[in-house]
Image (cartoon, rainbow, N blue to C red; front, top):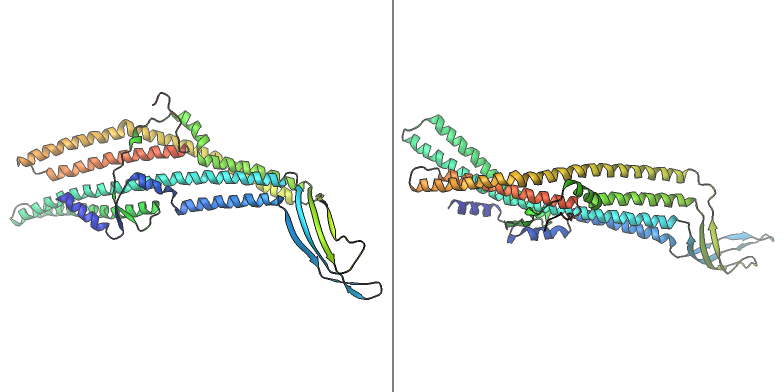
Length: 421
């Protein structure tokens, strides 16, 4: 009856915006490709990089334009006559000695960096969805456990109140039991609110705002037993596969290409040009059709190129420093994650399992004593059993998240473990 009442209260708290179907972890993780704002921002950055690449490549594109002038000129006889010119010009760059090629190479590296950042966003979103999914399950179990403890506290207070009305007991003890009940009532109500807030966060993580899942399936978490490599081998793998490291490395390569493009602005350029013209005043020195080569040799450009080179070098140095800092942070995160996995597998889950085993035994004993009317602590034993099971689930979910973070650090795949199937 108590659990039925809990379910009823929980369903009432989630009524209205909640979605009735039963959601699985696999279905939740499948929404990682949804148009979440984080993903759309990363895709926009990728689209900008692609546009920059097209712009850089367009330097070698054929161009066609209309060129003309409207003017009047004074003749030797003193008369003013029209001297209008109109021409259609076709121009095609032939050689720029590295400017376009380096600019395109820099844009290609920026596209690679944005691709890597998009993969990083997907990994982070996957972990976020998984964490929010587990938060909902834990919030529901926490509510059930707190409701059990509140019920026990209420029954103790209610019995003491009945005895006090019959003249048995004292008022301080009655106030203490009532305060104890009110504390558990406050915790139970807070847990009830978390069942709603965690569902909203899960809906937002899946980018389904306003569609709160009502029922979540318990995940199998079969990967929790998978072997993991040692720190040294995994660190070397991570430094090659981590998408954020790859993004910074691509940006450093893009900086080198941009430096080459900037320095190439000191080089000559050669274009092919063809035009057809019309003139309002005939002249033997003017060509109606012309074709030729146009070259430009920079002789002096002031400090413009040097300033841009210095700026790009400063940005490159900053990216290199950021990459080194990222590698240090990733190494710390990797060690902390491996240590967490080792602790959970060696002692955390084992201790939780033993606590569940003990509480199951204590519950059976309390149930037998209750049936024999020797003691009346059955409700408290049920609450303690719920708390032990909650602790066990917390350990399992924490291990699953740690393994997911390990995969994300390694670019989505872990290196093979020697001797593992």
